[in-house]
Image 1 (cartoon, rainbow, N blue to C red):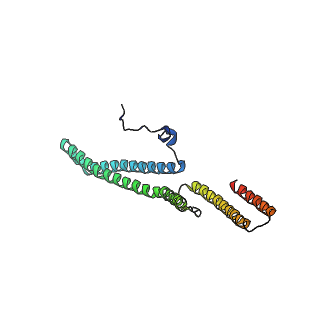
Image 2: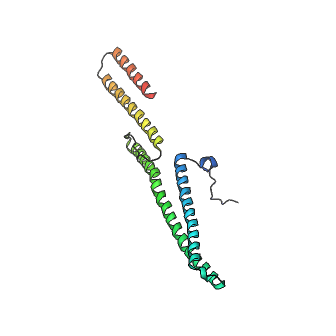
Image 3: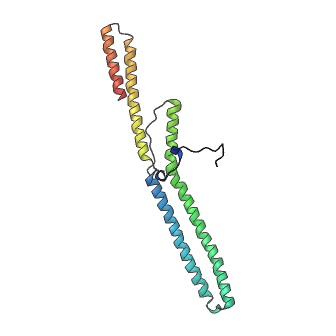
Length: 194
C-alpha cells in the first residue's frame, strides 16, 4: 500500500531499459575504460597471490610441518591482505581520478550550454557560436546550437531591415509608394519566417 503523500511518477519520467543508453560514445568509452581498469586490477591481484605464495614457500622450505604450515598460512594471509588492499586502493584512486577527468568532458559542455541559455533567456541576446574543447562530448549538440544561432542572427537582421523600412514609411506622403513599401516589408517578414 502506498503512502498518501508519495507520488507515482508519470511514465515520461520513469527510467526504462531503452533509456539507459543516452549518449552511446560517452557511455561506451567510460564503461570500457572502467572494465579495463578492473581487469588490470584483477590481473595484478592474481600476480600478487602467486608472488606471495612463491615467496613464502621459498623462504620456508624446511619449515613444513604442522606448526610450520600454520605459520606459512598466517604469513601468506597477512601479506596477501596488505598487498591486495594496496592494489585495490590504487585501483579505486585511479578510477576516481579517471572519473573526474572524464566527467569534465561532459560537465564542461553542459555548463557552457547552461550559460548560453541563461544569456538568451535573461538578456535576450543571441550568443556567439559555441566552441568546445577537442575531446569534449556533445559536439553535435554544439553544432546544432550554432546552426540555431546563425538562423536567429539572420532573422534578427531581417527584422531590423523591416523596422528601418517601417520608419521610412512615416516620411512618405504618396499612398501608392506606401502600399509598395508595405508589400516589401511583408515580403521581408515572410522570408524571415521560413
